[in-house]
Length: 281
Image (tube, rainbow, N blue to C red; front, side, top):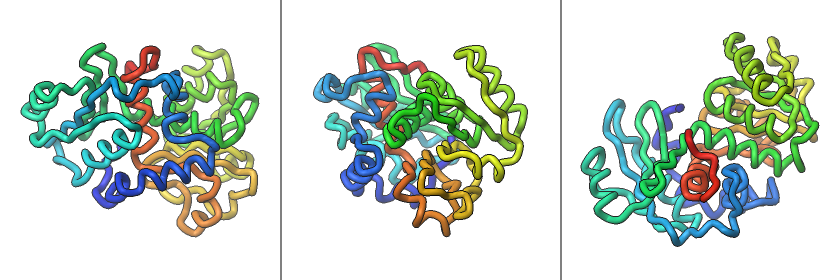
């Protein structure tokens, strides 16, 4: 998981309503509907009043990111679920969450960001949920993915989750990773699971010119430039940093789904809170 900075998330909670409106303009669907679809749920049947959620800060490793817990809580509150941030971190925070009647706990350290349903034992991992959430958003933005070729940049945890979700939706896949072995491993796993062949790309620049749907799951900055953009291009770009160069953002923004936390957190909630969610990290 990429470690966020306070500046990356400072406006997440205050802009969540505006963000949701932007998402609806781009995809035709709300944050709740996209996250529910990603988790195999029906947003209309998800009872937001059934749960109380606690966000527990963790101080281990490099420490608590300023505003992170509040940003997560703001996203969950926007979805209509009662949520609080514990006054204490770590083990004391976990005890506080249970004592205050939390059903679901969200917590993150330097290595994993997870949600746990204390009633059912279901877990959701942010990297996996983010991949699934962004595929659902990309599917809505493109009017479906079946039979369409998608270039996946990055074969890490988010990219792997996205690849599986796109293959399940019938998309054709090409993958580029700076570590070619990671691309070949992912291609092999997709073939074993879904029986579909993945094209391994070795020249990112050339691949960007040939594809009109791009899923950026890479930590690299600015690899997608103005020269690659076409009116038909649609881009899913989870997380920070952004792979679209600053000079191209003005043109790409209207056809790009991008955020540091929102889709991943929302999908996590639906995964652990639903009766048929995928969960399991």
